Image (cartoon, rainbow, N blue to C red; front, side, top):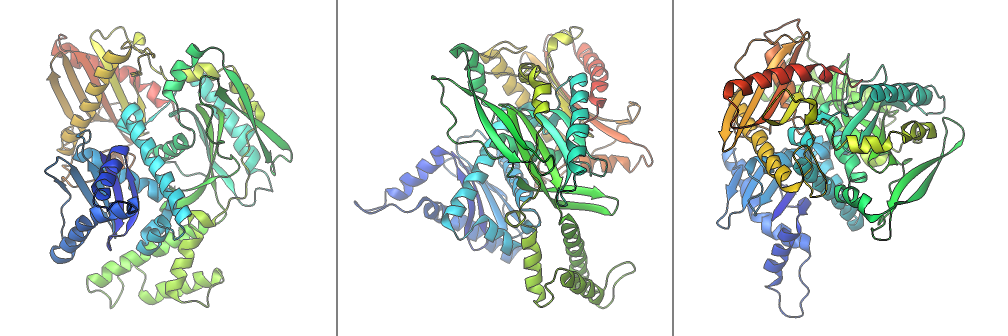
Length: 617
């Protein structure tokens, strides 16, 4: 019984997602009142009727009291969590007790993050985002909502199954030699060759990376590219997984159904950069006892428009437009390119104006409309710059209000077609051919506990470099067929539940300002540590962490990068010094003496510190 809804202040549904149980419950609730032979109401109308009183109540409280409720529970044990972002109200519901308030709040913030990545600065205008989320064309609206629903389901699956999305940090495949070879290939054989072409029509490859399922094999950024934030990278991995989902059950049963029949699906892409017709083969598994793909995979030459944070010497610009090209080399192994589009400078200018307007609005609200403070732009100067900007776009004959809409529209996902074709030299597949099966297995057993026999009683650990946004952990395969360090199915599933619970508990204490948690749970002993180091690995002194209010954004890196804020907070007392942040979570058998457990944690952190320094770039 789960649901997520986005609504406008006028109680208009802008997006909804429900699981089958919630949908059936609504259909039974509103279908029962229909007379015999009468057509039942459309599901969208039913869900609008169900939530309209809540939406109107929330808007009324904001208007009259300047405040509103953030969560409540009903008599039938349904939990509702609400959050207002500008004029959009997000409501998440759970009726099966599988999700608590923090889980629902995290889902809301992740949905908001995905919408920002998909729609960019359009989300800053309530009028435009309503038009984007609820197109007038019914078929277009259905397709958009289905895509957003799939994204939400993909995230929920990853958050439930994948440790990297549990702790919201990217997991790298630990194989330095192969990683370096792939980075060199991406740099010399792909990025440089495309960017040096005169036919790329102003588009430039900024980042290229290879994913094995959700794990990062290699990542390369061009020299003039901004750092890709962990938040954006995690969001992109969700999108890639949504396009090319990892079918764990299918992969586990594949050896049991006999030899696989390989089907070659050819993509013929006209190469403007290499001047030749490139045929890229995508290996798809097929077997009489297995279902074939229901629909052809997305065309690699048709990119997705994404809006990512960019930090340049001029400043930080959130939600800058990029094109994302994805090509599956094999099922589970995907090559991704991120390119800067020709009108990216336009987006930077728009953000500068938006920031100036925000400062101006603040001055006006404080009664400082008469004159601008030193270094601040006056109203007339701002208008003159905006008029000049509009004239440069060739739209000087329209009104300022219309100017804003046109500028936003230029930056919207649907109005910026890409000009550079997706290119993947066949030599990349040839280079990885001998490693393909190894990589797919390695992605499931990236770190083996066999490598750490000096820690008796250690069952599991998760080590996170929060500065780089990377994590390392042994595998936790929970299917009956897959074997991990914890054995098959039931035991691994039991430990998985303990690990997921430990992460949630550590976040509760972290929100209260605690950086260390140790607790005993039956036959197990759990530890959580957060600490800071300088660049040489010297552990810095413990400092009180900020206590977060209950209504703060969820702790993590995907929806809101708590750790980036935490590093800035801690670095204030270490000016001129590089400060790094780390986390370690461990599960030990409870029979191990506490002093040995704490010693293990310290030794394990030192052992894992060196591999974590292998850079992404």
